[in-house]
Length: 75
Image (cartoon, rainbow, N blue to C red; front, side, top):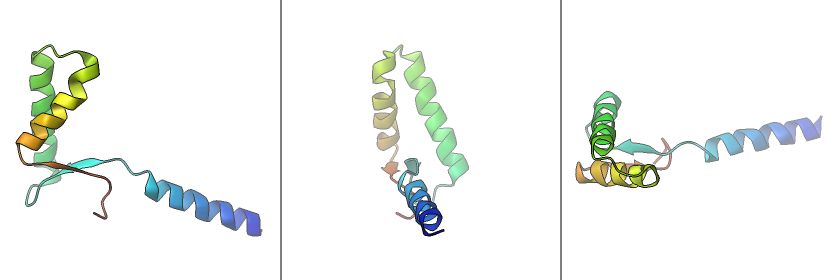
């Protein structure tokens, strides 16, 4: 029973630690953030950027719009 409890706690902690990063900007809703991110991805796609460089270019675009990439919701 102790092993099961320990595994449950370990899994819960792992789930919290592995949350996906997300883009955020003060006073901007998640819907508006999604719209801005979609626009950046669209523009990068139009520019025919190599697949290996696309996410870097999207990140530059989002930072240029004042967004920051945060590690999880508690930050």
